[in-house]
Image 1 (tube, rainbow, N blue to C red):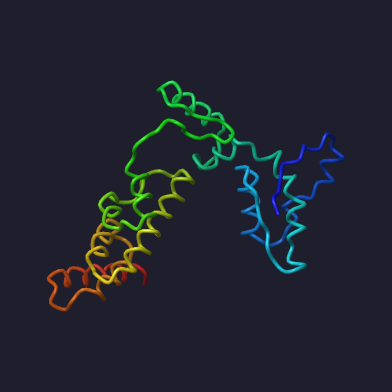
Image 2 (spheres, rainbow, N blue to C red):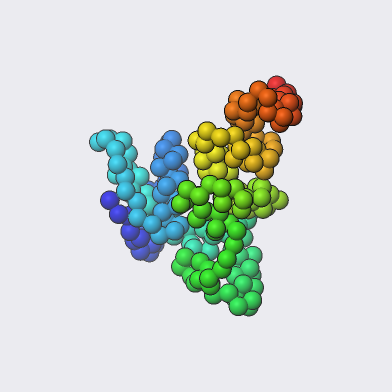
Length: 215
């Protein structure tokens, strides 16, 4: 069922009558879905057996809406400690530099070219060789912005899933070099390299080194 925004309560008594999401025990994924839907203006379809909590969770959606403004939602993606004022400053700088930034929700409407966008498109279309050529290592590895960390992890997982499905070790070898601390990639590469491959001794040594770190 689609969940829509409702006007916030007009007085303290009405506010107290709105069910609070903090009262819900468990349901971590469902609560996170409610927060995302409230922050970004999405519809939300809940499915489940009778008594699983769909109606109980839906009643708590209005209580989220006054607390999750657009700026705060984006600020949480950019800053470890959410800072709407810092976000406004960054948006102002972008606009001053000639970029068009639309509001509600904030989004960049100026056409841009970026390796990240080309990489995502190549992955979407199954062009793995091109995606690997574009991927030069973890996305902005020094950034601690929650949204960047999430995207960084997502890209790595998508690439890993794609190369692990390939029978040839070449794509796996290339990605393992880009993500050198990933033991799963190196172990898979070791299994796929022929016994007489000259790279095998080096890969074996690296797997042992990584494995020792897990002990």
